[in-house]
Image (cartoon, rainbow, N blue to C red; front, side):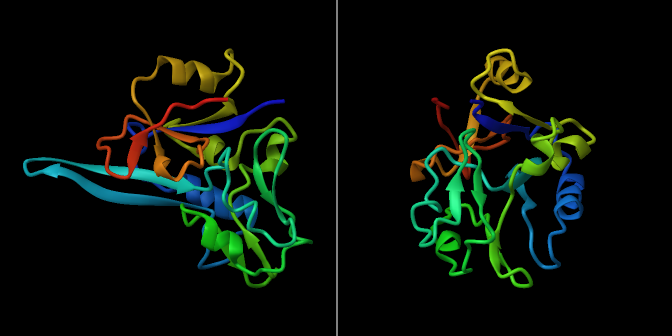
Amino acid sequence: MARLGMLIDLSACVGCAACAVACKMENQVPAGANRLWIREREVGVFPDLTVEFRPEQCNHCENPPCVPVCPTGASYQTQDGLVQVDYNKCIACGACIAACPYDARYIDKKGGYADKCTFCSHRITKGQQPACVETCPTYARIFGDLDDPNSEISKALEAAGRQDVLRPEMGTRPKVIYLNAPSKKGLTKEVMES
């Protein structure tokens, strides 16, 4: 089985939010909710300032804290490592939301269930890329099999220098990996192990 993940090159991200808009449209995300968002902050000291644009979403962790806390088994992990929600089993209790250290989940009030990024599983099962990857005008995102040494994502990670993930101290082993972060605040190197 594949071990699916996403690489985001922060040096290529211009903060245009095309990924966030594509995600909302593709997945019919309700107003006021987000599966993907862009954090923006200044890095450095004048006159050496830069702006960091950092897209964030569900990290599809290898050790997801949201899965074991779910009382109905609605939050689960697929064989290829995606963390998903079975909407028919979800009772919208919010336990998974409280357990997620990345604030990546929300309650869909109309549907009555917890929701989050799925890496567009409905698209990848058809051999398509997630909407955010396909839409990015600067090609800042790469999606693929982290265990396939011939995949585009594996080749990019091998060629890269520093690789960072959000909150590695949580032990969740995120599969959203950042390259070329202008600072380490909020990001710290973690070795991606299978």
